[in-house]
Amino acid sequence: MYETWEELEKSIVGCNKCKLCNGRKNIVFGTGNKNADLMFIGEGPGADEDIQGEPFVGKAGKLMDMAFCGIGIEREEVYIANIVKCRPPQNRNPEEDEAKACMDYLRNQVMLVKPKIIVLLGSVALKNILGEEYGITASRGNWIERKGILYMPTWHPAALLRDDNKKIEFWKDLKEVMKKMEEITK
Image (cartoon, rainbow, N blue to C red; front, side, top):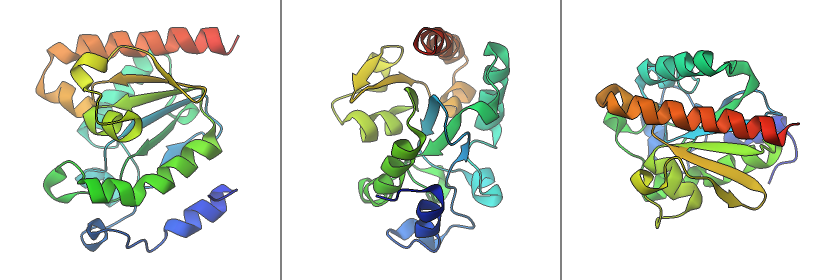
């Protein structure tokens, strides 16, 4: 594990731990407040993210930004990362070996940020962080505590683009996160 952001970011430059490196334009490391109390973890970069080198800048990211605005979160206040740092082809879910190849980077990001709450965006994030026994439909909206961190699984913003009904649940989950943040940071 790396002790500083500089060491960690330097360690990922030119990464070739899995086959995703073959098709990437940019490594999409993470963005935001490196001392945030609130962290969001998604599955992996899409085409827009691969081009810009920043997580959640495409359609799903724009939707997430609208939700942030609605509940009073500034994107710069939180830290946003993904399970994998390179775009899977055709935006497919990361394969197990790809996720495992990036997991030390993500663990190190969590260790350096030291968030109080992590919002897990979708099934891929949930299963890779908390375990295969968790399903997003049953787990979303429920707090799960591990090693002093509170986790809130919810829908991935891309799922909201496919199913409007999930927007209400996503909104409720984010409001619950903000309520819990107020309790924790008092």
